[in-house]
Image 1 (cartoon, rainbow, N blue to C red):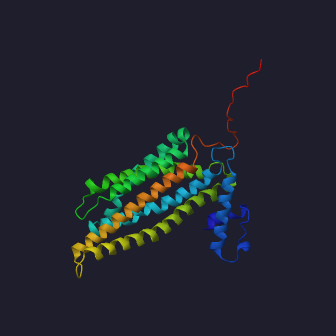
Image 2: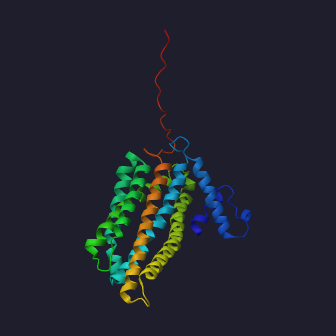
Length: 279
């Protein structure tokens, strides 16, 4: 928190004394102030400053949805497939590799051509499809046939999103505010992760309990507990698919298409046909 807080004095109404002694209240007010400034940036662009606000919402969605992979998929690998912690991490390396390649290609090749809206919206939809694909897991699933394909698809979607979100969130921001703008995106992702952990854990626990209630007669055995746990995981994956689908709708509605404006370079004004001279 020390790095971002050093820049908060540049934001309007960022004095913590105005919000009491609560650090959380001060940081919340600072982030709200930054969102307000984001809407004041880029008046010459399509959808104006809503583009900046949409990037923070996209980061929130990413944080919430990613825990379906980083938390519950690892739970499944370790508790149901018997993977060790090291083997579970190695199993996710293909997703990391695809994310790195897609992020590089998206940032260098695709962003200058299409802008953030197609990349983020498509990435969200790809992630939704990957999470829906993960619902095929079962007690006898294998990594190559059941897990490898979905996690590579999710890696592709994440790479497309990461390429656009960070660049869009800092586009048009003054150089002295670039640090806090980037920190706000990271904070949104962490906040989404915290909300996603609480929400998805509750959903998984409820789905597991409902499965046991509907299928057990007396004390449940290990096999039934195993199936109930997997049922909770699949319910979480469906919810993650819905979260990413919602993110695609938000991104499509608020983000802009086309190249991002370059600071100091005025955007071209739309040309109009010359009025015909009345004879």
